Length: 299
Length: 297
Image (cartoon, rainbow over all chains, first blue to last red):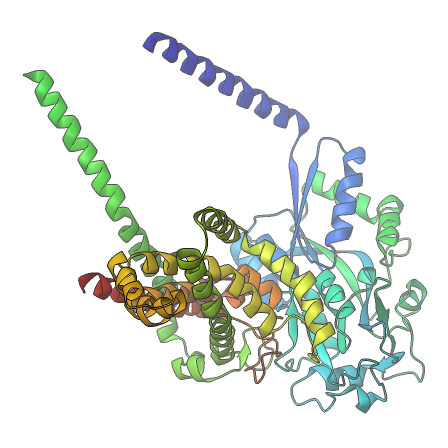
């Protein structure tokens, strides 16, 4: 009996060894993994790229995770990932940190453009909003707190403006703070969501809500407002043409960062992302592709 | 001879292992507490951090471009308001269910109800959070004049459902611990079932019921995922049950991953952890003391 059991144990061990060995062999044959992390705005896009990239280079597996632009940069600076997705520009302190930790300078690649769309509940009669009104709604000491102040009446009788916001590691949050609030603080008491999708879902079920996210997250459940900048008299919707013509006042570049000159496999991925094939996916997901050559950053 | 010695050696070895298992919980608790304290400790020498601001300010701006401020008053208020509201709902519900299960229902129903209550305890908190986000919050928007569905009431309803199983099973134990002679004496005096329960059993089981509620409170105050999803995560000191709130636990969960390691923000989050640890420790300790006093009587 004891003998039999020992033999069984040996058999199990052997099977386990064979399995793990063959898996390891399999992995080395398949080549390496490319670790991508960062912006929640770009998460859908990065996942779509990763799916298609399998057919471009089967030896590379692209691993994508979100968490926010800040987290992506933090992981890149520590050398934990190959590529950081970022929906805002790298801050000087972050670049300095990267130099200090790894001795390499972060490299920036523009991979698309995005317009920051402003949403309200679909029953909200408001059609357009100005940048300064947005600032008065969101910033500390802002003087807009009721929809009636904007001349809008919400059908269900609720008048308070419910501010929907993002968590502080979000690149979208920082972009909004820097470009709409002019780096002033957000007023406390907003509902701080952990993702753009959550922002849109919450606004869809909250009659008095207002919020913002990347243009690709717009759904039929919410109303997208036209936004008027300080320059012109007209308000524009966040569409591809308005972003390319630079009429839409809050648009930004979608960026990819690597540490130093990327290794060949990473380089190949980035080149593909910026190629017409990669850029077609940008348009499919709902963002604005970079023009041929990739020049001309709006804003 | 040798065989006997071998057996003795085995005995000593097993005893040692079991002793290790026994004290391991203590080691873990102390270890975690020390680790959390160690991460928060550098704050004493940080210029931009003041303990009075931490406790008495509601200004939480860990990433501000103007001045960084670290006040958790709004989160303390949020944590206690949502937990106390949950206890106001859970205590009568839980004790009522325990009374029914232990005193009023038939043995068959008793078994069914106990299994179902345990099942309630087995639902993962993220599932509760999901229900709160997609179901109860919409009901709240529809049937009240609340501006937002994800608010204190929504979180409290979920916490109620999550802490009720604990309160029910501990209260039921407390009621069962009351000797049958009490029930028989009450019956002999001509008391009805309800009179027996209200005048005899509840006073006799008083301490056990209080401990059950305290442990339910401890469960609710430490809950993270469900409140993160269901309370709106807004930094306000609530003035009504329909205001959105942010709890200490949810704030740690949402921000720890994004704060740079060893930054002041990171250390303050760990200090929040110390605060939470002390709160739950106090709650559990008082529950333990109450139970012990009851046993001694």
